[in-house]
Length: 196
Image 1 (cartoon, rainbow, N blue to C red):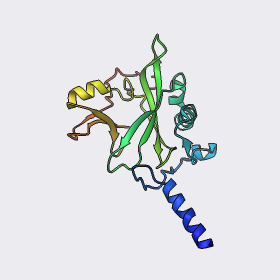
Image 2: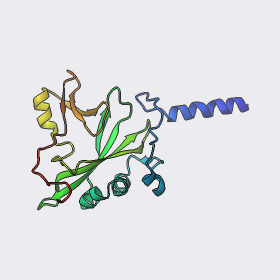
Image 3: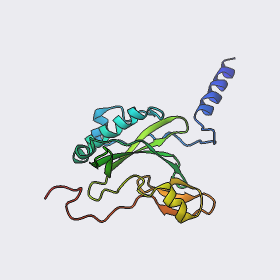
């Protein structure tokens, strides 16, 4: 009887660790830098459907790892952007843009940084990394919109990444053709970077 109970528990645990598509990858538990280990919480998963919690964690991570970036971006934390993983990547990503250069309507005109979280096989996210883009902030994340990408790639497109979620691509899933989804502008010296 004890063996049967143990077997059932094992089957249930295995089923919960797999996504509907059959994901069997281990959770993307991060190797945290000392600043985030000291704060705590970042080695635990976040519920993927709690957007505000994820945004708060993104800003907290940026503040700890890049104080100058967090100071510039604290006025705006964007909605999550989902990236589908394609080989060799194994975990879908949820990206949180941090905005600067706030326009008259309250929306940012530049993205100073992006915080990446990776999906496990279920409904949880793990912190991954922060990318400081303040030296050459793109116009958005992604800065190439879906309609423009579809026009260039000739059909329906999806936002994907292969090795680095900070450099996503639009991909035509039928043809496999791709287009960079973030264009870094050439800016005048000093824009978005440290003051001289």
